[in-house]
Image (cartoon, rainbow, N blue to C red; front, side, top):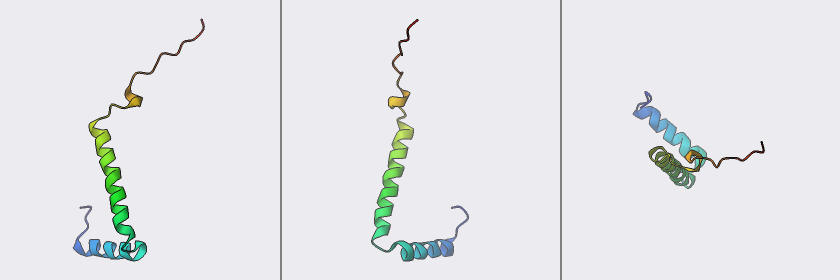
Length: 61
């Protein structure tokens, strides 16, 4: 995984715990999971309003 071993991942986890604190990390994890879930849904179902045909704009000739 990106060339990271167990010691490097442990150091990253300790630094994140020191910076964000134990209460903020689960909130960040939930937000990240929600974002990834939304991204995955959009990749599987790209049919949105922007993909729908636009109404024709009438112009005066």
